[in-house]
Length: 498
Image 1 (spheres, rainbow, N blue to C red):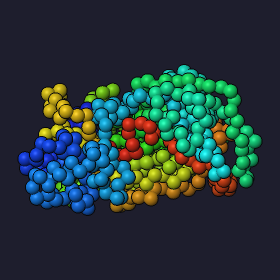
Image 2 (cartoon, one colour):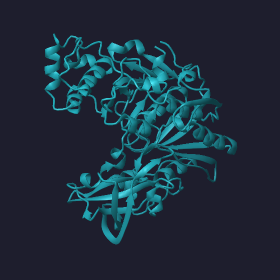
Image 3 (cartoon, rainbow, N blue to C red):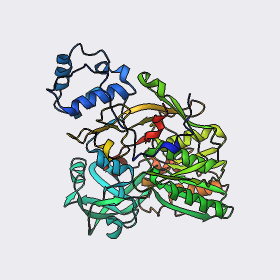
Image 4 (tube, rainbow, N blue to C red):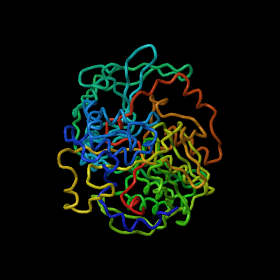
């Protein structure tokens, strides 16, 4: 297999690989169907991991143009067609509404209130829904409004939240949050009361760029210096900042490292490889990940190496330079996890396991997302990658659709993967502590305190299962409102090697 360790120098593109091919569809397709439907079928036929398992995507599925157009026009729109063509095992491919909005989201830019929240069903006895703030982006509308981690709300836009109305209430660009508090908490058996506090907070979403590094600090314990990094997305245009934070850890001389990935749903594979390299210092001759494509594209099966330098990109995603890497060479790593820890977060854990790094997981089982994708555009060639305005103008101007299909499975050097997620060494969830939820990076924060106590040699406490018993049911994470989904993305240069 051809390694991709030398690919960095050619990754000069705005974002991900583009293109679809119509070579597998009948020639001279009748023009009585939409461009969008043709794009969907062609793109999935060319790239999709499960293409040979979906009968309607077979190269010889249609005998003539009439059969092909009749099939496409059977569906009311391109989204219905796309969903019908997905394999039963695929939970992660999606159709992109507006590729320009998608491109900005990959750089951390999106319309946002600037806070992430979770919704819980109060109890099995009622249908009321309780929201709690997971974190607030500095300088955002939520920050300006005074929201902070641990704040609780039970109403929005004049209505009490419940299982029937919360989805509609979350769809707007303006929130009026009815704030509440949790009282009368009893841990076992778990009971509590939610009370309104006659306080409303009004916020409006704006276009906002979020730094994926939410918090980094050094915590002094009785026995060691501990580096803590709250990392919320693998975004390649923040590589220089990530490297600098590790430089700070290195200069301080930390003894242990805690990476908080509880809200990290993934991002670019190169960034996952970079973080693994910053943590471990594993040689760039070693394999971080192996990518196995569907049978139609198995010639693209490749290995993806650890890094010995830092590829730096500007705010628009253009490659700028390579910097020296501030590797820590840790032989033990603590990772804080939740069911929102997915894809590139899991690839980080998986990629380190063959190299003697002891990875200790604290939190909840991870998502089990061992698949990756590319962005496919409606462009004239399968290998089309717009490097300038002239080439970009060749993307079909009649619509803004693109797609993000699963095209590969990801494994580590030893062919290990994680379809069921990674199970924690110690199970604990933050929303079991709503009555007292400290700030992220606070040594008393529930997940972090478990890690710090273990680092100090105190072992794991024996109470986590008690806290989880009788917990409210987590029903919604506000990240689901965003443009992106949990995934591992490839940059264009990753595929140009074939």
